[in-house]
Length: 341
Ligand code: 3EB
Image (cartoon, rainbow, N blue to C red):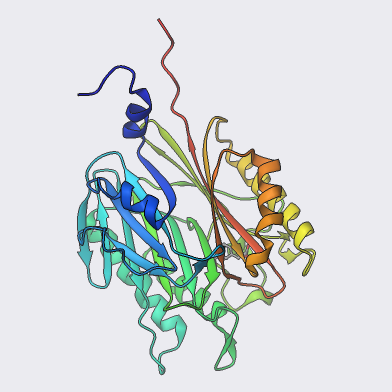
């Protein structure tokens, strides 16, 4: 029975979706109640034994900056059912879907072909599950800035993604995304989707990534700086991986403090452009080229956004060699409270 003073539990139960970044022992406790779990992403860990086999799980090729294992758990407001389509394993409820794919790269297949096939499989999954609109993609690529037969792998990735989006994305503009390198296992892509498209948001300080000049590769990166999605009472803001870039150019090469400040200025600018109402909860994932950068970035984030946010620090490679840090964010606006009395 729900007691009247359990309003914290009630609020949690009515939000459309929330994310938790947990170490393995905290995650074990949360997974005791798995019915509403949409999907789980492991960093520095394979599928944990306590996770029921019906829960979608993918192991990302990045490790927590502080060592050990961490899980990113997406939990919905109502029970979720497993959905499988081709190489995509996922889950959905009436409002949201989660899915994930591990890329099976082979020696003789160029990365763009593998990525195009993966994204086409994702669109097939969405069609089968009845979800029209991807809200947010995460792309973790091994050897992201390495050359593959004369073209950087991130540039090949952009070609493949661009082909699949041109063929199958229903919206004119792509949703938010992160694109980060990690070398502790195969490349992965995972995503959240809904029935109605998110509202794409750009950053007034930056050229849109989908309009980057050819300097950065034959096809520009298909992502918006942020996606805003209304789901029931919730306003969800997904901010893409954000780095020390203004216009289309990297700023402060190899200067961690200045890059962090520029990145935070970009996070503020895109939040302002999104126009999302104030109170709510923030969750940040921070990608660091060197785990030792954590203290500096953590201090800056606390100063900018206050101490009360979730933060997951990961050791990963930003897709431009001179960039040391990339930060993505998820904000869930608090639903308006009923007037007392
Ligand atoms: C940038 O602003 C930094 O290719 O999906 C950030 C977020 C970046 C997403 C992607 C790349 C991607 O260009 C890199």
